Structures are given as structure tokens and as C-alpha cells.
Image (cartoon, rainbow, N blue to C red; front, side, top):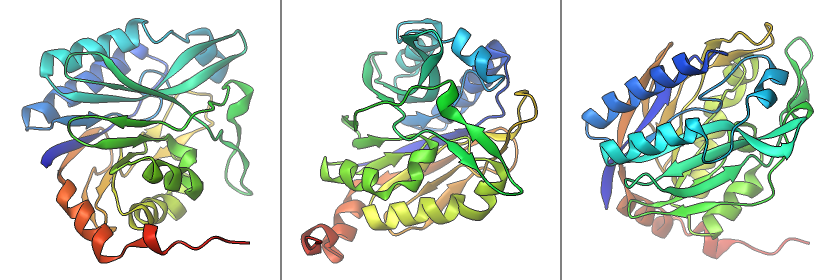
Length: 271
């Protein structure tokens, strides 16, 4: 089974309508090139002041997901809304939620970010995602006619045990929609993505935010959206600025790599 997949790169701000227009334009362009699966970055619809993010949070059946559902149905593709600010029922916190839509516009899976970005990097960035976001609690693999897709978001990338769990649940392709900071992205983004693809022996889709956002000067995103194969090879990536990249996903390659180096069978219990 092989198909074309695309990762979309955005420079989202607090202007949600403009963000969604940009995302839709790039999704349409990728689908026109033959992509059967298109993925957008973390914070696709909003990347602005963090208190405002909670105030603007929407339910899964709200306008942002409604627009993506309609687009997936119109184009007849699987479409991953990398993440949006989902209402949690808590007036002070939302969820950071990734949603996969099938070609009929139905929600195939929804994943709420498990690991929240609370960091203080010397000379870099101090940030507390948990001030406005509630952590999710479930590991999610979406089983689709294209592939079994393991869902994750951004900071999750640093937690290898999550990806091992996704693979143990059958994932052949891993999605990592992100808004990696410029400082950490320069040092760690590609290294971590390739490492996860190699150790999981899976394809990896990493759509990302790029550039500065109007969130009070707190964030500049690294960009470099990419698609990585199970051998750790970068198949395609997006240069600076908004755009998209396409690559072929061949699930037979996943099987061949896993057969050649049967990591799962070689694991030993640790004491």
C-alpha cells in the first residue's frame, strides 16, 4: 500500500480567519498534487496571546473542526488538523487537540496533547503551557484505510516511551504537528524526528509552524516541516515560510525495515 502524504507549514497568528484561509489554500494545493493525507501544524487556527487562546476555545463540533471536516469531504482526503484549542469545560484551561478527519468528513480520531511544554531554557525561552492547557490522558492510534496513524503533538516528541506505545498499538506512520521554538528547533528538531522514525521503524509526518507570532513576543517557531522514512531518511521538507512538502508513503517499506532489524522481537525486560 502506497500513497502520497503532505505536511503543511504555516505562520499562524491571532487572526484565526486568516490562519484558516492560509491552511485551506495549502491543503487544496497539496490535494491537487495527489496527496491522500494532508497534515497541518500545531496551533493551526490560533497562535497568539495565551489567555486569549482559552477564551476562544471551541468544541469538537465547532467552526474550526467544521471547516476542516467540510474540506476533507470536498477533497476526498484524510486531513489532520494538527491542533486547535479545544474547550475543556474549565474556564482557565483548554485542550491542545489534534483531529483526524476521514474523506467523508467524519472525525476518525482525536488526540489531546499529553506532555505540556513547561520549560525554562537558559538564554532561550521560559514558557508554561500548563498555565492555559490541560493535559490529555489517552494514547491514540487511528486505523485508516491508508495506514495506522499514531498521533502526538510537538513536545511529545521528547518522550520516546509514547512512540514505543504507539508502535505497540500498531502505528505505521507517526504524526508530530508542532510549533517547535527557534532555539530548541535548531538544536533538536531534525535529530529527534529522525531518531523517532529510526527507533519506531515508521514513517513520520512533521508539519510545523514557522517564524514569529503575535503572542507578545514569546515565540518564534523553527519551521523545517518534514517527512521522514522508517530508515531515518528525510524524504521532503519545507523551506522557510508557508508551504507544503509531499512524499510517497510505502507501507511495504515499513514491513521490510522491521523484518530486517526486528527490534520489537529483540527487546529484553529491564530491571
